[in-house]
Image (cartoon, rainbow, N blue to C red; front, side, top):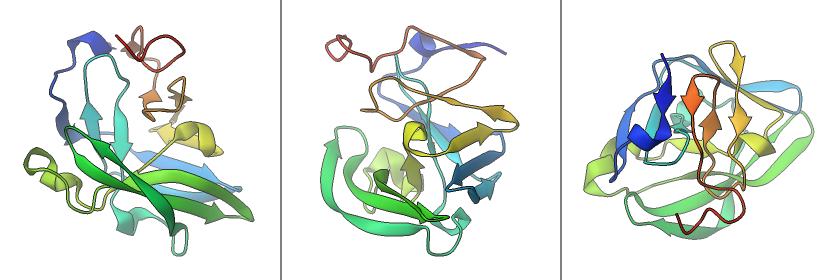
Length: 154
């Protein structure tokens, strides 16, 4: 089934991914789970959030800095390390999300472009251009997508 990102809601909606999520870094599968959530927001590819317990031991490391999302609250950042590779500030989570996103508490999202590969079922996802939002693009998704140069003001 095709999804058009312009049919996604604003404010965003949180829902189960409904597909197997795998993430590879440094030649190591660091996540393999069927228990992930996705955030759907108008003009954006879905952002996938994984429970912290789904990450392989020792992969997640706290990083400096934070950011604010008007919908989800204050995010903290994570470095991810596996197989001799470290991806600095490549993940983020919400330790105290806003009321509408309480199920996201401590789930971690990653920028697909900073991982070796991210998969939904057997499909390798493409990274959302610009790396500001961290969306996961699949073949069943229709844009145009916000994120590339000149699109922040849409």
